[in-house]
Each structure stands twice: as C-alpha cells, then as structure tokens.
Length: 201
Image 1: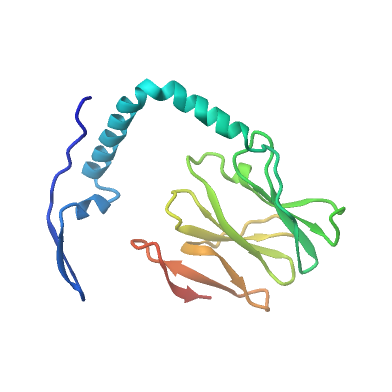
Image 2: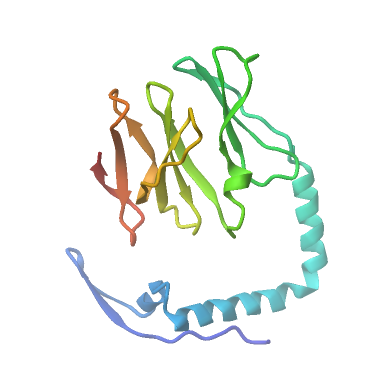
C-alpha cells in the first residue's frame, strides 16, 4: 500500500451564533456508519504497512518502557471516615485493585473493586471513580468499556459483596453521596460533546 486512503468530501453547513461554516468531514463522526468504519480500517492498515520496517524497534521500545514500571505498585493510603483507602497493582495484572483497611494499616485488606476481574472479557476497561456512603456500607462506582469516558454508574453492597441491578449510563465519575446513605448526586454527560451538563440525584 503506497498511497494513504482517500476520504469522501460531504459538505455540511453548521450554523451557530457565531456564523455559518462548512465542514467537509462532519460525517466522520457517525460512529456506526460502515463507511466510516471502513475508512478507519484502511487508515490503520496504511499505518501498519508504513510502520512494518520498524516493528522490531517498536516492540523493543515497548518492552524497555514497560520494564521501567513496577509491576507490583501501590498508592499512598489516605484515611477517610475510619478506613484507609489505597489502590495497588498485582504482577501480571493490567488494572488496579481498589482496597481499604478498617482503622489501621495493619488491619486485614478488603478489596472493594478488583479491576483485573472486572476487566475480563473486555477489549477496553476503566474505572472512572468510586465513592463510599457515610455508613461505609455502599459503594458507588463507574466503569467504561468503550473508551469514550461515558461511564456507567453502579452500586455495590460492601457488607455482602452484592452488586445491585440498578445502573445509570453516561455519567461523569462516580458522584457524591448525601448524608442519608441513600442519595447520590451525579452528573450526566452529553453523548456527543462528552461534557457533563446535568446534575441528578
């Protein structure tokens, strides 16, 4: 493949308070459009073809950079409402484990979110954040499995380990608990701009 793939021009007039402009490639934001997906595949194939001569160097650099990262790393614990919270990585694992200890750093570890287990079966996985209720019994946390930072908010009973069936899609982070241990404030994100624009409870 010697030449980069070409992309069709489909002019669209965009009107805003600042005037009207023409965007010839606006149609490329249609994420489910087969023509867009085919174009992206062609771009990736072109990239792979052009980078093939340095694939060995790419692999070498990746291995070298990865070797500088501690496989078993741990964050500095912080105290909140009677618990010490921290995250850590396990050797060979890709995602963090979020943990806590009651009252003392010498107390038994409680894993509240196991990123490696949660990420199984997904080509992409990220935890957007978490928040624990004031009574330390319910965990609100958010995850993204698409890589658009449109998180889904879920709730986990920290006493039983049960994950409740209720889910809230397209949120920012994990929200904030009210003092009643029942109410969570969270921000909804616009699916196009990816910006938070509404606050719910």
